[in-house]
Amino acid sequence: MLDIPLMTTGDIALCDTDILFLRPFHGVFAWPDESADMLFLQDTTDSYSLRPWQTRPHLLRHRYNAGLLMMRKRHYDLAQVETLIGFIEDSEGYKTNEPYQWFLEQTCWSALAGQLDARIWNGKQMRVIDKNDRYDHDLVAGHFVGSVRPLLSRFEASASKTPVKDSPAVLVRSKPAANYTTLNFLQRRVRNKLQRVVGF
Image (cartoon, rainbow, N blue to C red; front, side, top):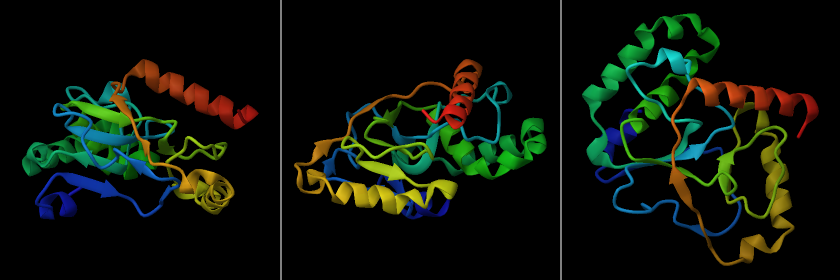
């Protein structure tokens, strides 16, 4: 949240070490057009320290994952980051939502995205991996967080058995990011619970 954005001289690009790239690609570390200000990875859900009704007056983006992101350096303002962190930590929602307090950094990045022309990479091509996820040829990169990290070797083995590693580079596409709202928050939570129960 602080050190890399402050030290970099160009636009900000962050990539966690638990992201596995599975096939040749292009278009990830490049802006899709001149108006785009931020690009980010699709999460399985909204992993934030605050519920959507607790974020006012700030706007967050739906399913933001900070494991892989780009942001134009001109929009990074340390005073703004400090204000957002203070807002989150002082919120009653944050104080009573102890299991999700460690998502403070991701909540802050998403709030920054809420003020910008933010895009989300195509979820079929790049996404946070869910425990029920399956490898497919469209997948360019997967973020193997926490409990799903043991799946990393399985995905790597599956990709190595296919011709995708020697195939031409595919263009990773993006689309405008949706807002974090009460409706899509509840829809995603219900969907994820159903997936855990029936495994689809």
